[in-house]
Image (spheres, rainbow, N blue to C red):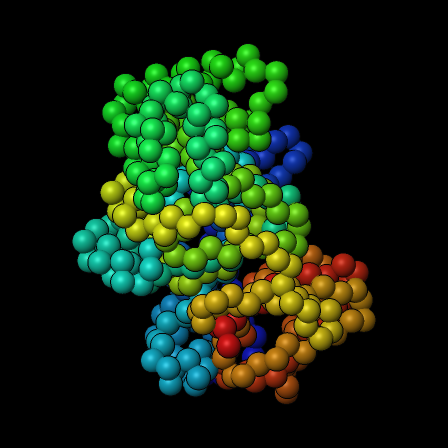
Length: 400
């Protein structure tokens, strides 16, 4: 079989309830990208471009339809490249997504490798693989998320400011200098009985409804409580940082960091895993004791950055794990770039415009908006030529 060429991939779409929906003539981003016209009630939450067994891409080779994970298992060196195979890999190390949330996602964290193996053995129905799941989120629209813990003094100030919270956390507020205070307070949030939580949520909701000057944390709490009435996870608005990304800005989420995406559209790339440990704001399986034990409890804002410049007009989002890196290339008709390759696999996704993918000895391939492509490791070199104005191409590849 010939692997020195590009293959067009058929990606999968996850219809999670928090995903964006059609509103009149306004279509969800993913539906627009794929040129689909969804029903009003059909959510377009995540576009998956990868080989995870839960939703692998498919593609055709020599008249045969393949799942990408199956093709890699049969032709690992040709697709992954010798560097990855020599390192012991037999599966794609990354998963590329577009995520579009209209409603907040769950309070969650992703396990490290050791914990992922344990969770997968213990509950394979809830933790479908044994891999860790660090991830990067790159904003395509203004994007809001909760991420990492706020500074202790900020949390203590808000818990003291509201009578409902000072009552709920009275014991913790009596001992604010205790070294493990944050861990104890967060455990109190998820350990208090449902009556106490219900009273606090109602009192706080009523108080904020009459407030003339709610804080950003108050507004975030009210929005979460509106989407998930009676859910204690809404109180995480006072524990976690509210982070707002402008288009082109990114954050990296290491394993064991608490977060929840709230609203907007992102490019998301991660290790090849679908493991999520949840503790609130969801009807899905929650594993509260595991989440409380796994967290790092580090305080402070996450780093927000725009990637590093690449020759030819691209930007590269390198992360502190070897599983993946993301490149975002932009240009207009007549522009070209030649992405560097060390003979390892890449995935391409065209966000805007049309590009021509040119492999040595092959006819150029027209890559239109919304198309996804496998760049096998056996294809060492290529050129990407912009055919229209305002072309954007995402490349996901293993890290260096």
